[in-house]
Image (tube, rainbow, N blue to C red; front, side, top):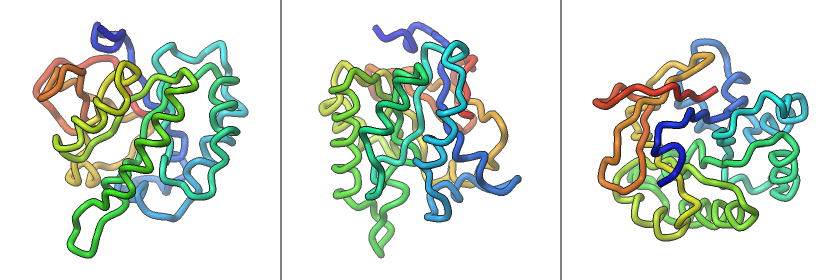
Length: 193
């Protein structure tokens, strides 16, 4: 059983959200208006390794065509961050004209997550629907420590300095699931910053 399944404190580290205008909706994180991964890299340089929590997962745009993945991995290790999360998830960014997620985006995202886990990183996988659970569990295996349920409705949330994650328990999976939406389940000391 993973540490977060046992109730350990969990944090999704998303400094790029601070780059968006105050009062923005979460949907702004899915638009190409800032260099998501570059914001993360810049912030990692000033992060104090000694204050990093053991269950911190860096929010990474896994479908970034311009990212230098080796630099990101090295910067995460230097900062003491041992986990990665696909946030914002490709299933909310890449959509067909009919509004259906593009499978190619999720495939690339899963490949990137596999690469990070091959380097020893733990993973949280953000999903828009339950249909994505099986692929994440199969591909990321024992490195997958939990799921973040992020349906399209969650994009209407206002971004704040700290956004609490709500535990949904083990909803449709053997893994713990969290959401930014109000959920039925125990609230934990979990947050996205």
